[in-house]
Figure 1: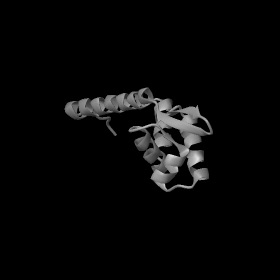
Figure 2: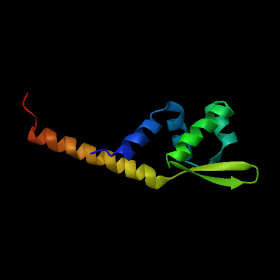
Figure 3: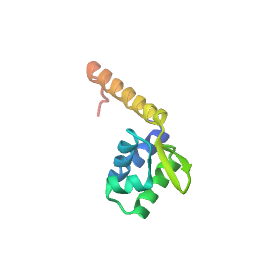
Figure 4: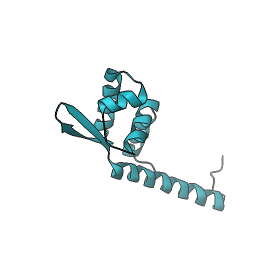
Length: 103
């Protein structure tokens, strides 16, 4: 069963720009300047989305001079993937057993 934390992560990742940011950060650690160039989003808009990702625990920050670099936390994504795998397994079992409630 998907926990509240899992549901919250799905909600955070449901935004197309945040999902794009996560995809980019899966491949390399980037600063805001890089993310603006890659996404075409305005810096203020991007900063707001990065704040949401930080608060959800999806990304970590690393200050470097006047820049802040962002990196994806793989353990958070792996945990979410595990929850989806559990849901898939439950759905497979339900399908195989034909389990359903009567009306």
